Length: 176
Length: 211
Image (cartoon, rainbow over all chains, first blue to last red; front, side, top):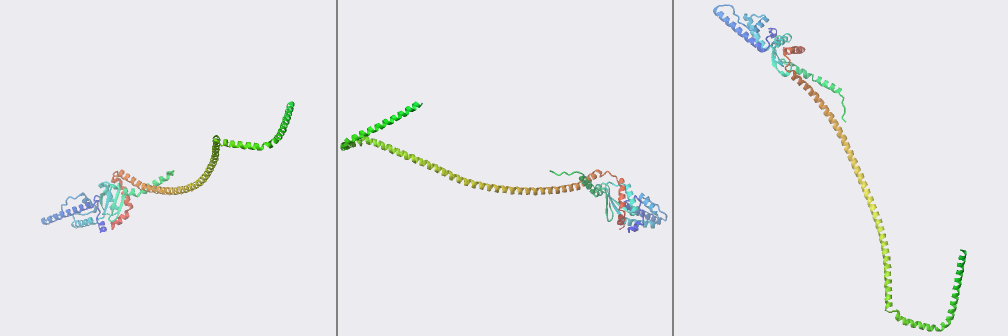
């Protein structure tokens, strides 16, 4: 199913988390309801055409990026259904940082992930100061610790080797 | 000097001759008187008997008895003194011999006792010496064992301390770095490192996300 989703839409860099996607889905549903209501009014009054309501920057980017026509009922219906599916099935990568993540960095990371890893990848952000630096990355089935804490722990042997090498330099004098 | 010797010799010869003459005259007088004596022997004996009878009464008179008593007393005292002296001498000699005997016996007894005592003391000394040597050997063995155990324990403790030190040293340095750099990095500066790590594990992540 994720393969199917991956071949469907391209997500804008500003859409980072699942909450963003859920917000987008709600907006699309609201837009669809609004347009359906206009359609019903037009049908009652005999008018034609839609008055496109104002949409958010995220939805606007999304529509522009995927070259969608929100005025097309069929396309809007398909978008709504697929976005619901995407919301449920899009792969989420949990990324825990040592400090508060700024939006620009998150957008950079999500852009990299969608380019290199998965086009619909989403990020769930966490905060853990003890990581010192780097990221603690959790994919659906695995955990990758790219934190500075893990790097330091991994290199404990270097300190021990240095100490042993230094201990070898010191002359040991036997006690009388 | 010769004249004097001659006078002395002449004088001596004269004296010998005078003595010889006197002896001869005396013998003649005695021969002449013996004739008369043949007649007067009886009278003489009678006279002597009378005198003896007369003197017998005088011989054992009070003074004579007293004299005899004194003489007897003196004689008895003398004998007693002599016997006492002999007894004293015997007694002294006996005492002396007894002393010598006692000295000899006591000396021999003391010598034997001293020899036995010395032998016992020597044996006791050897026993004590042997015991001391044995104790010293045991103490030395225990000291060696203790030294070995102490050396081994010190070596083990040293190894353990070094191991703990090395392990904890890494943790201490790590803790120091964590405390020092905990909030010094902003995320933007970490992005290259994060991306590099993700790039290194890209295939694993992709496969995991496709599942």
